[in-house]
Length: 294
Ligand SMILES: [Zn+2]
Image (tube, rainbow, N blue to C red):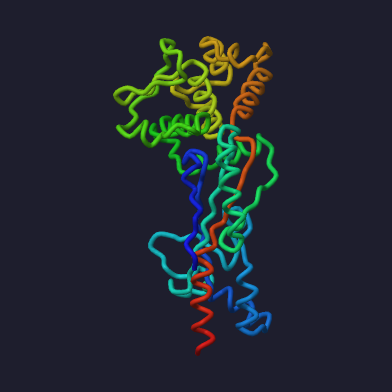
């Protein structure tokens, strides 16, 4: 197999999320040869075209022969087949912000030159859907009963609003606190474990924290403590957040909705998927050859 020239490095890590999905090739071959009574050769040529669906990768409807690797288990959950039957698809999802569109287009041009190795697609999404999916991804690993998630969510929101910043590098020394600051004219400044953020940036963080935790218990938890919607809007008004974001509604719920809309609009505008099939094709070939030579 020719070495691929494709590199995803031009896309900021903050804009990408990677999902590894396993496939059991024993299940896959059995489906074609035992259920559909096809020859191994035909099964192989059919399987070569196979690409999992988006819902397999998101986990919303992962179906046989696909599954996610689980710690402590190296058997296929469907047929108990061993690891030697496994292959892996790698889905790279890009939540594309207009600021990285040039790099994204260049990458797509490169991917199109390797149609066998990479399957690419762009599902239709509204900005609100992209935002809700992002919120779900952010929320999933969090322990909302502890306190650590508050900082974790703040970092995720910073990555979302500033995808071009190398956050791994910026926060390499660790993050102890996010502090509202009116002293800088920049959006944020990092110093000795503290991230000083401007009022609009701080307001975005409070809003996201509230959205993440509000269904958990009454109100939502933020850096400012547990806040009812009314208290949250009061805080946002006090730091001139609503003014800066151009929100004029005086009615609380309407102002909240407008604030969320503005937050959504500041984020990614489209979703792109690239599915790396190289490992899959390699494994598929080797298993087919063993079957054929038997
Ligand atoms: Zn299996």
